Image 1 (cartoon, helix red, strand yellow):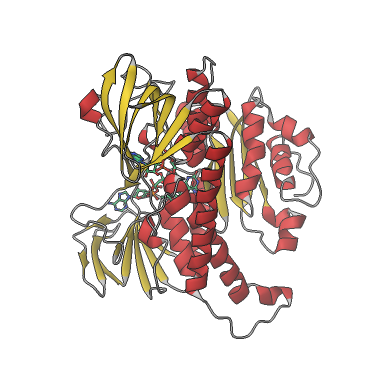
Image 2: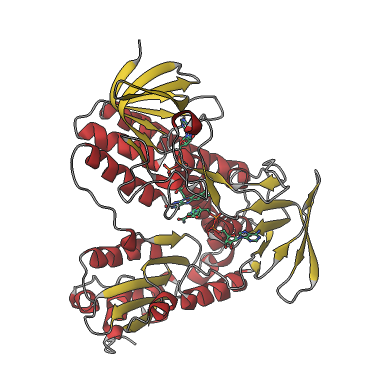
Length: 475
Ligand code: FAD
Ligand code: NAI
């Protein structure tokens, strides 16, 4: 006898598990199915984000930053350490512990909210009597029937043509988070978010890292002033980045990887490294879902086609997160998950794509929300810009971390904040003030008039807002 649910969520990444919890909070009878297993074959809910994405990468970034600080910056503070030794096993083991804490946290939240969890692959079987029949195969072997289905099956790493991931020599984000010994030379294809974050981790731990990027400009998605500042900072750290390259046929053996490429000037080059990380974007994950069985429509790029409300072409079937259009970010997936659960319960929830923040957790951190200067120029929008450097911020000086600036872009007439771009210490935390102001459609003057604690990095935000009106107090 099939088990009946109001909502079945397929996938327990940030899109799926949050949708399941919100739907349960709203009084619905909810199940969530997830296929991810840990090394012991046990359920590991949390998806890419928890297992091989946001959480483990931030754990490694933190540990490697401590190592870098101890090696290169503690001396400035008068702290002399002799014989610093890297215990990579412990460092990676700590990351695994952090991941497990998050997996267990989600299982606890499911229990707390009375979400029934099934460990296995969920696939559409049929549409019967106004409900969707879903088959679970794996540790759990069940037939479920749901009034509503939320698909949150996420994404997978894109491979270079003819170079499948073996996770030993040719690494996706998965293998790149568990290299057993620091490679002497590491090649990275793609200077996007993963290339920069994981390239930074292994560079700090001692690898010679070379990143090859196809686009002629560095970080084309960011404000170009921020991108230039970042490129300077990364070059100073020893992260080698070549842009405008064309990758040839990569040869991988048990010992090394050879990457032939044409550089920006058209000259043929060759990079030989111990291992290669391929981080050239991700593709939507729909395998095993039974897309054809029920005629679920995909768009031309293979994403599940949805409307503005995350509704698919099938009745009462919704899709959220990386498997649908929009930025591939955990917080975007979560917002969509909440909105869909609320729509199912009859509410009119909305996700504002214009205020989704982007963060790159390198050192310096990079964060932005809204439009950048290139975009405003292209749109022909009349805007004012105000910047403030961390060099002039007391807290940044005390921290010994003065790279970068805050830049605020505001409408020339109304002063409404249109975009905020930060490169510098704790940019990931500072950006939330900008998101809040933009959600309220506030003005630069609003930020400038708000009392910010002293001495904090957030004062750089206030000063950048004052700079929009050309009246900084500390610069
Ligand atoms: P996913 O997290 O991919 O989860 C999908 C889940 O569905 C998986 O558990 C999968 O096993 C399961 N599944 C798939 N098909 C089925 C099926 N048929 N049946 C049952 N289960 C199924 N984003 C940020 O916002 N901040 C970051 O710092 C950040 N860092 C990242 C670092 C790396 C290295 C990577 C790779 C990504 C990072 N991201 C980050 C992106 C973030 O991980 C994704 O945007 C997010 O995980 C998407 O959530 P999701 O719920 O859509 O899918
Ligand atoms: P990305 O889209 O950020 O970067 C991919 C880069 O590879 C681009 O610069 C692209 O021009 C380049 N590229 C593509 N094909 C190439 C080729 N053949 N040769 C050389 N360069 C090539 O994708 P990435 O880094 O793989 O990350 C995937 C997704 O995961 C991102 O879209 C991001 O949203 C998410 N993510 C988010 C993080 C965060 O929020 N801090 C951290 C890591 C990942």
